[in-house]
Image (cartoon, rainbow, N blue to C red; front, side, top):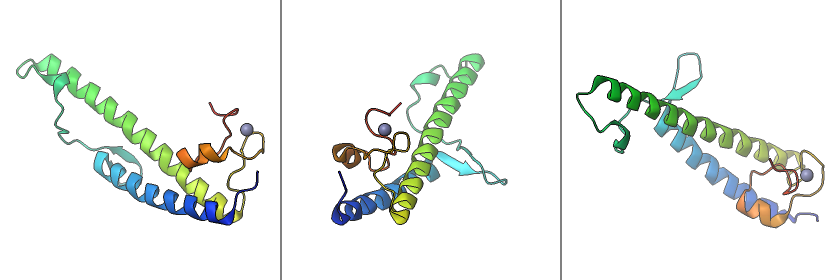
Amino acid sequence: MLLSKEFVGEQKKKLESRLKEVGEEIEYVGERTADGHWRPRFVDWGDDAASGNIGDEWTETAGEQAQFEERLAVLKSLLNIKTNIENALERIDSGTYGRCSNCDRFIERERLEVIPEADTCIKCQD
Ligand SMILES: [Zn+2]
């Protein structure tokens, strides 16, 4: 099914606003290192359930380690989403948006509505 210009135009708007949101989330959970990479920011996120035992050195360290890993996972997935969105915007510009990168069939419109940055059809998704 060929995608209409209107549909692709709407998807582009969605992607652009998602890109902005994701960019802000990345700034919030991460910080850029001097060499241009991202790493989790060390801030208190408020949910300290993991490190409830203040005074217990070991527990505190283990809690911080767990939090760091959690933040790293969040940051990684955000960076992933950002890359996917940027790729989708490039595909819109090059006119290949909406095609499955794996089997080259058209991606289901319903799928694109939910995940505008999707680059595989339902059959080929992980
Ligand atoms: Zn496919």
